Length: 163
Ligand code: DLZ
Image 1 (cartoon, rainbow, N blue to C red):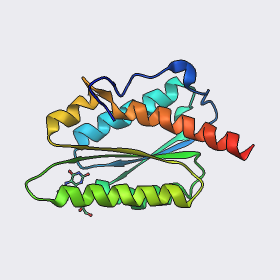
Image 2: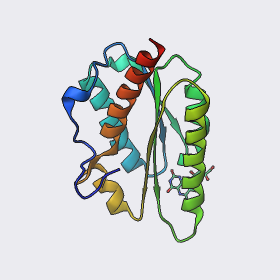
Image 3: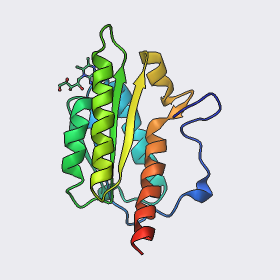
Image 4: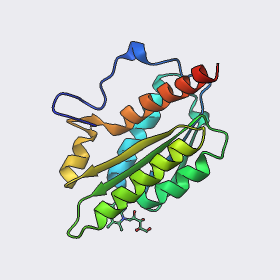
């Protein structure tokens, strides 16, 4: 999460394992496409920067963030080392957005705990479009960058724990 003192795109490069040979699935929601496209670009470019081959990144879109649960559940069944789920839910006039956020968070959490492939939470939940832009390459960095680094570290974690 971006906080006052933490930019989503800043990390210790020396703490990131070499990602050459790792494979990733990215599921992206079409809702708020201006934001999710920027998050996707951040995630892809950061994976590639750390050695991932472009051909080893499988990107699939789903209509909205709620469909990230199904999309990620299908993606983990494919031959990828980790899955990144990317979406953006912006507060509306009704509580609808809160139900979506709760559903996606619970669904992805459950998926993460119940099977072997790490699933990375790339959902940004904001009060307005400006806050979303701030976290999609704006003044708070790019959540996609953070997801890519987390995904690489979790693949490394799994490889180490498997021995
Ligand atoms: C319906 C809806 C609303 C109101 N807002 C968002 C949003 O801010 N971000 C998002 O990714 N999706 C939204 N959706 C669509 C739902 O995620 C979902 O696609 C539909 O409810 C159909 O299942």
